[in-house]
Each structure stands twice: as C-alpha cells, then as structure tokens.
Length: 300
Image 1 (cartoon, one colour):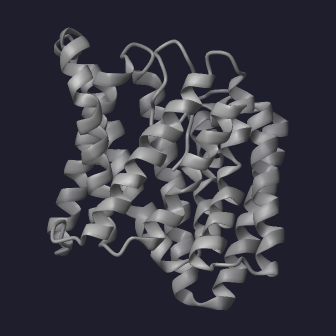
Image 2: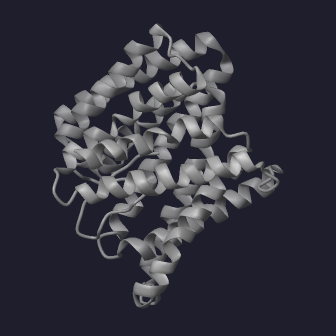
Image 3: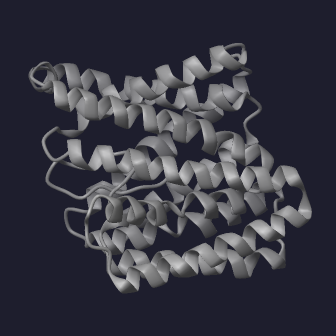
C-alpha cells in the first residue's frame, strides 16, 4: 500500500508539472522520452544486449508502432495541459480504457455487458465535462479534445505494447519504444518549427522531475506491486491520478476545479471503475515498466 501511494503521487505530478513548465509542449514530451530511454540504456546494453539483437522483424515492427503511438500520444497530451485545466485534461486522458475496450471489440475479443455500461457512463461524463469547458472557452474545449485524443492514442500504444511484451522483456522494449517516440516528437517539432533547445534551467529541472516522478518512479512502482497485488486493484489505484493531479494543481497552480466540473468528472471515473473492475482492458497500458510475466499498467 505504501508503494501504491508513492506511485499514485508520482503519476499525479505529471499534469501539474507539465502545466507549470515554461517550455514548448513538444520539447517537454521529447526530452522526457530521451531521458527515459537514457536511464534504461545502460542496463539494456549490460544485461539485455543479446535479446535486443535477437528481436525478430515482427517484434521490431510492433515496438516501432508502439513508439510511434506513444510519441503521438505525448504530442496531444502535453499541449492539452496548456489549453485546459489539469483536472479536465487528466480526466479526459484517463478515458483510455474506453478506447481499449473498443479496440478489443474490433479485434474480436469479448467485452462484457457490464463493461459497456461503464463505457456509457464514462461517455456521458465526457459529454458533460466537455460541455462545461465549452461554456468556459473554445480553447478549453479544444484542450479537452486533445486530451481525449491522447487517451485514444494511449490505447493504441497499449495494444501494441501489451502484445510485444509477451515475448520481449522490459529494457529492450522501453529503450526502443521511448527512442522511437522521441524521434517522432523531434520530427513534429521540426515540421511545426517548435524549438527543442534553449530551455531555462527551471524548465530542465521540471522535465527531469517529470521523467523521474511520472515516467520512471510512478510506473515502476505500479508494476512492481503487480507481483503481489491484483491487476484490478492496481488499475483502480491508477484512476486516483485524476483527483491527485487536481489537488496538486489546486494547491500549486491555484487551478481550483469549478463545482460544475465535478458531476462530469465523477461520471467518467465511475464508468472507468466499472470497466476496470469487470474487464482486463484497463490493466495493461502505457509506460511499461513491468516484467514480461506481469500485466502492465497505464498512466501519464
């Protein structure tokens, strides 16, 4: 429980840190992936170099597809936090299990009736919360749409990653995946003219904190406790990222959620609880730091 609490706190800092970082969105996303890959590269070269060399063509394609999806996910998630509130962006991005269930259904996998009920509840919450933000401003509503797109892209990333991690261990997968995501983000920055360098010292500190807290520490601990804790329990704990991020943003950034936001956000979380408790689609996902034998978890 202590490890879970630390992990929730770690992923809960993601949204507030990004929102507080005075740097271009693509630069933040690019460097967190570069630093994440760099942190795991020494271990990969030391202990997993043979496995990396032995990857098949199909495995390479799956990892590269996962990395492209992750890069696109971050390209949507990061700027959404500059357009709408941390609470709204985190709630919309947390809707990833909805898209995961649809992908599972398209692939011919069984999705229970109870899970579909949860999806309907979550979708109702999405409509309600987006309506509130549309009333605030078109920019806030656009941020909501970007965060929702980020959730969909995370589900695609999850689908590729969950498959390849059945046969590929953590380190080779993560290094290639994060490196691919960084290359995608660099390409997007080049295409849009967004700078990746020239950041302030304060921005670098926050990006390093983002990498250590959300990208490494939070998800590492989530997957560590999977050895002794039910994946459903872990997945439900991950949903605590939404209120955690909202509280941190309120105290640190003075982004106090409006009362009108609460019903929509509550519906999203209630629907996701139903989906998660009934099916395994939410128990696998982004930022894979588990062992090949464990189910992986998601978060920002």
